[in-house]
Image 1 (cartoon, rainbow, N blue to C red):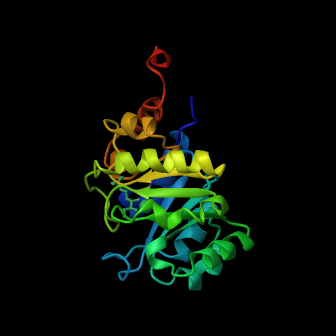
Image 2 (spheres, rainbow, N blue to C red):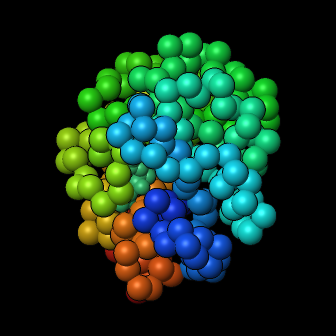
Length: 226
Ligand code: DX5
Ligand code: ZN
């Protein structure tokens, strides 16, 4: 089955001093979503951005904002991120003891709800919530930093997640985040991913459009490359 591949550049590896230009460049280059990594220095050992940056991004791009919350108190911030303009809000199962409530709160705010899990967390933890979510994000690195190496064992997890989504009749997009590069994109897409998040692969290169096109093309059958 041919599936539409969506590319979500992660601004974590962008030049923050020129953020609007960087975002314009990936938008021109064919990005489908803009991935925004929110870290609190508690759930993950790093600090990044919060609602004011999401609000600022909303003013400079038409790309849907795919906000990945790597924070302990997600419930406390749903409102603020929704108001700031998040289109997708994705929360970690490890950080949300009342995941059903969190997902409902996100949806009540008119935002698409995503759930994600760390590499060592079993897919069983999202089985019950899967029919309720718009996006399932498989972390293929331990979250916290850009530029890490893709954990190969996640390929099997991506394939299992694909089966779970298809069997449950869920319409959730299957997104993969961490260590995604042009040279492993084909395997990740063959395992069943719909959305590729790519930070360093795009922003540490020179030709953003070419990298986005190459990531997308990795999902096409060989004959389509001609
Ligand atoms: C990791 C973040 C990722 C990260 C991906 O904690 O969630 O979105 O920016 O970066 P790369 O593509 O460089 O692995
Ligand atoms: Zn992310």
